[in-house]
Image (cartoon, rainbow, N blue to C red; front, side, top):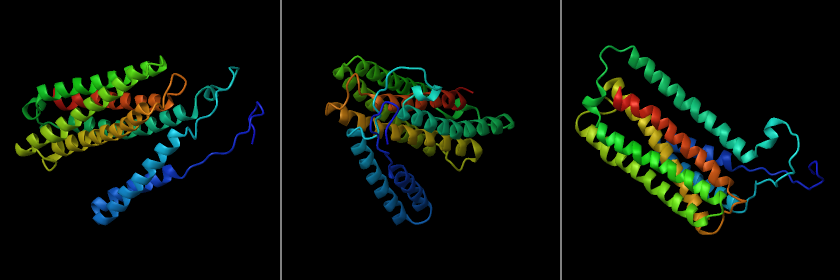
Length: 257
């Protein structure tokens, strides 16, 4: 197959997304039904993750730059970025539906607990600052590699990873245990179930982002990025910004209102 410029283009496809999706499905199924199934899911996730790293390192799905000319709108967007935006749109639908449902149920309730009586506002505010600073570090990492500053990229990625890890440690290792010990659990009616479901889902997305940033760090320290090759950094940066934005909706709902 050739493109409009007469260059050879082979059709590239991969079963990795299917394997990854199957692994995630088996993981959750195993957690509910039979734990050995979860181990199989973890194995498939590990295999898919390794394959994605291998494909990314080889730039297997990167398309060559084409000369500027009049094009249809989406032809100016790389398939990697388009795929990232489609994925983020699906995530927006998930979190949007859950947040709207939470707001609806809470607005319709006359006996909902007051947030400051349950949640530690100072701890929540501090954790919010940590996550937003992590997002800033990720943005600076992208800016650095666009300027061909590999050292700035490494510092930004390491900072974003460290701060994101601190956020999850505080959330899952300090805040959650404190709430549970005080009697506020997932079984504490709708206030408890919605809080742990939404913040737990967000924490899982932070953890997934940390895996992606760890992958970027490995490639960055291996010299895998330059001012002409940084698509992966940009894609993960978009995801990390999305994680920050979601938290900016969750924070006031659970800590201020």
